[in-house]
Image (cartoon, rainbow, N blue to C red; front, side, top):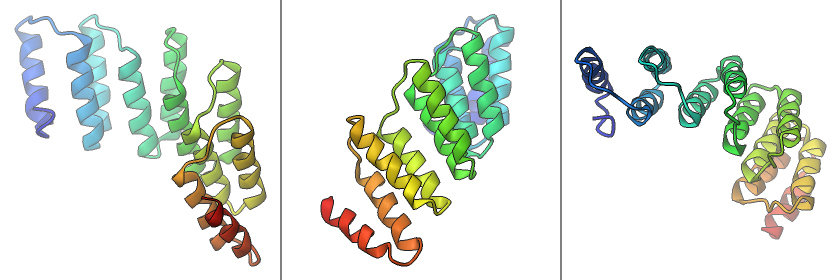
Length: 194
């Protein structure tokens, strides 16, 4: 039902199963939470998580990561941070994908220094940034027209052995083209390097 976009019917069926004392597991709930988040009905997804707790089933890594990602995509950054805090308090360690979603959301909201703090925190927790994390930071600096900082992040990722991908290069080239005059040459150099 969820794959067919019938989340309301799936929710109704789930409620019916609960009412009939049919035991459900975390996979059933995660399927519905994911579908509701993809549909953009985050409040219903949160209600579903509350329902699973009432059934004595604790959210797992997938549950929390799905909620973090959905909140980030909707620009609900502080809510996403709260979910990560809950994850950590419950002994569920966020991974590089979860942290990268937070970094990207902060950058898109213009909170690049906060995004950098998240990267520092993840490194302290032993989680190395990947190309998605670095590309999000590059984009954040480009959006703020901070091309020198974007270039430092770009160079740092190479230094750390993380090869830029087409998104990273395109972001830098776009940033140089939209930035101050005189940066077109930098954009051309990057274009020729790809």
